[in-house]
Length: 208
Image (tube, rainbow, N blue to C red):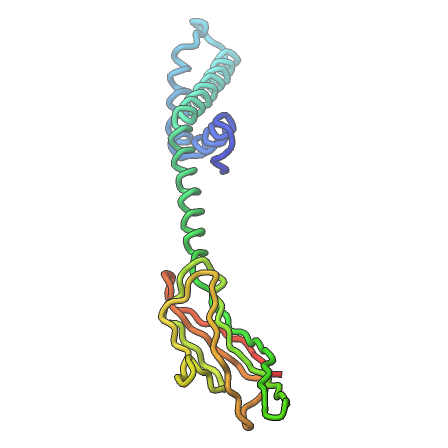
């Protein structure tokens, strides 16, 4: 049932559920039927028809009383049940949102042309490649590790791509130094940890 619906609709559905219970079916209706039979008067010397009419009237009274009791009980319980159900739904939504606040790190390749001045007014154009690690998630990525087929520089002379912390919606860049035997396409794996645990993404990158 949807706890955001009105109290009347909630109470009506809950009343139907109460009537399906074993207590209402096996105890409440027969008990009220018996009590109602004593309250409905019949002639001193009742005929078979009189007894049938009395039984039908007693059954009708019993059913009506049970329906009213179930509805009253449902109405009295409705605010508490709806509040509990709504709290459960809100809690589930909050938990789902918190789970989405994890990090999501993906690798990609970017390239740029650089020009170097040579003697005699000559210039040399050179293409450089960079490995980009981007955290597209809402959480902090910790202990970021990358595995690739190419040599990657963390600094000018330091190789490696270990990153202790990569903030949400942020990126970091490393220079890639391919050699002659390196493939132009390679599978790159990036792993990290966040509040949800350990994760890994893979992507095929190209130096073309």
